[in-house]
Every structure is written in structure tokens, then in C-alpha cells.
Image 1 (cartoon, one colour):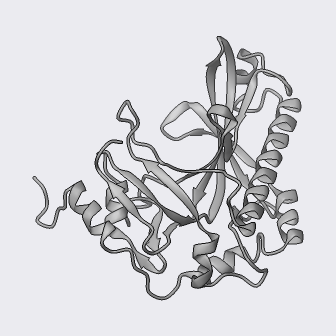
Image 2 (image 1 turned 120 degrees about the horizontal axis):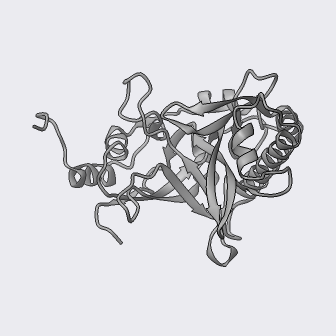
Length: 283
């Protein structure tokens, strides 16, 4: 039985589409974490140079898969990145020019709930966004280098030693890397950013906060928490943290491989006012 105030997916979509508004600012929080990680090229390069794998552990709900836990600055911080106009930070009025159009299909063709928003890279991004994309490529390159180095020096004490041995993995063969930026058909590149589907300690409907400026979008969080289809498109300020590399086995062109997927998550999903379009109709 539904709760008294339960809204259908269609009602949530209608409410979201009619409430694209914003009030003050969540910028203080964003600036605090951005200024210590990527406010200048020097600070960003320092962060990049300190990125490392803190540990490798099995996934809590799937012991056949593993993850590298990623940290930087002597294993005390997450890897944080977001677009900036100037080194002193961002303001609410900066967000439209620092956002990118992103799309989300909540269920795939097999009705599996997806946790990602995607942006198709074009030649039309603003200069700050081009800088952001360039830095994403640096992060992906750093991760590939760390994986190759880990494989090169692996020993039997590693939790993934036998997975790699079974698949004949060496530092330069039988493994693949899926980055934050990846290619689709016709070499089109996409940025792939995820949200946390599971609520942290039951405090929210999902684990990632959803905002429009400084206004919490409870209806959007509710929609993203469900197992029903929806399509969402909007301009989002892409403030991300990189927590994990997921490690699993795959068959690629009939060859057993080990896949390493670098997962970038939104710090917040922050939509630009008046940019959101939602639908429950399959396109």
C-alpha cells in the first residue's frame, strides 16, 4: 500500500519540470573542496601526482569483483574535480557557463536500473569546460599508469593475483581500462558520471544529494531512487569525486580479460535552473 503522500513517477516528473528554480547558493561548500584540489594548474598537478591506490578489496555484495580504493594527498582525501573560471572559486552566476548538458536513462533495455549521466563531448564546450575535460583525461591517464604499475609488481599477497593469473594478464596485455571518458560508436567520446543509488545510513532516498542551485530537489531524488523508467536531461555543474576503480572479468572478442573501470561520482547533482526536462515515456 502506498503512503498517503506518495506520488507516481508521472507526478514527480510534472513537479520537477515546473520547479526549475534556485535560491541562494551552495557555492561555499563547492569552493572549499575545489580550491584545495584544482584551483590552479599547479594545485591540480600536485593532486594528480599524489593519486594512488589505498587498498584493493572485494565488493561488499559480490566477492567475485574487486575495487581499488583511490586516495590522494597521502591517502587522506578523495580526488575532486570541477570546472572553474578563475582560481578564486565560483559563484552561483558562474554555474550556467560551467555546466554541461547531461542525459540519464533510468532503465536500460533489460530493465536494469542505471546510475549514470552522460555528456557527449563536442567542439562547442566553453573554455573552462575544455579545461575540465583535459583534466579528466589526465586523471584517466594516471589511473591507467597506476594499474599497469600495479600489475607489473603484483605478488601472491594481492587479492586479485589469481584473477589476473587465470586471465594471463601482464602489464601490457589481457586487460582493458574504462575511463571517465570513453568512446562510443564512430569514436564519439562521452563523459560518464554516476550517482550513488543507495542511501547512506537511510538519511536520504539516494546517496547523492540533488540540487537546483541551493534548493534540494526531493522529487528528483525520489525519481532516481525508483525502479521505474524515466528520461532526464538537463544542464549540470559536473563537480565529481573519484573513489574507486572496479575490477571484474570479461570476455572481449572471445578472449578472457580483466576490466578496470574508473568510476567518477557526482559530489552533488546540481542542475541549472530552467534546464531540466523529464519524461516517463520511452524515446
